[in-house]
Length: 453
Image (cartoon, rainbow, N blue to C red):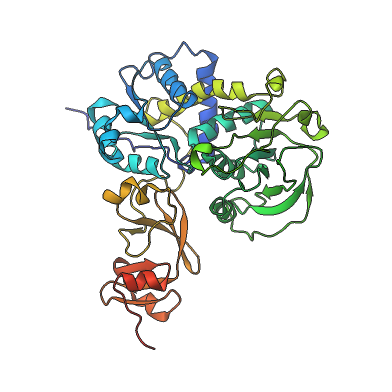
């Protein structure tokens, strides 16, 4: 008698750091430690497996560390490391590329792309697991795993750490992913941005909504020069993680002890030439501050001039170790995604790439001009938003780049009538007949009318 066929494993993509639960992340650290203990001893784990790296943006560490990780697991690698040498230069869509490469070509895809939300597109269209190697200014979740792993090994914990984020916090996708993860683990964040490069409002909104993060002004007076020409700093603390909380001022916080300083370069490829002549720089003098006595200096690399070379030999500088730890961390992640190791920890409640609550919705468009839906995806992607619960007016988040927009007007596609979001008639509109609009002009342009009172 033949054995019953085993159920197909659920495809696990890593598009956002939210695609892994906190417990899964900690368990992956343990596996990474095992792989790191003998990097040459795992060549049978993924034998016969092929990884494809599809990089439409330049990369050194991310691409090579993924390729090294797969080769150390015994698998093979195929790569498209130059966008101009791929069919994208001929106009092929990302969706078509991943459907082909994720067919018989490869068993797992690592995608880096200049447009926000591109990794979610790849995950939806590929039949094999997808890893986000960085999509525009959206997220870089595997860099965050490496950063968390480094902190965890250096400090022995993540909860309660005081972490300073410095430099370009606006355009750095690494910073955005890292903020979400630090809040989840109960670390405290001190932001010291270069003026004009502060954390985006949508990142702050997500920290407030999903992790109960509260904000305060911060004093870090003995760290000269870290905020460029500005001395402002903000203190973000997840005092009530995983609960809704008011984003209120807590009063001034004196920061006298720092566990890590995370520097970032100016992401010049993502902004229109803003002046960065006084960009902050870490030096031996800065690190002589009492608060930085036990701080680890971190950087996702490449650096330009924001960390002095004189700090390379400082035992507190761990940025090259960060890069080294990326290999065992990515070994653990891919071995898990390919079903070669199992995790006992439960996944997060939602890790699906299925359409959102408002797929194909009329009216709204993502307001993020860098979103793939407003660029390449105009040709083939339907508008897709996830409804944020318990919001008034209703807030919808783009299912690709997660940028939020308020739906102040709700239309009925059956009657072509539209109402303000809090009108009683809205409750009578069937879900499948709803159209969402941010403005009256949007509604009228789509052919909807406002019934007379």
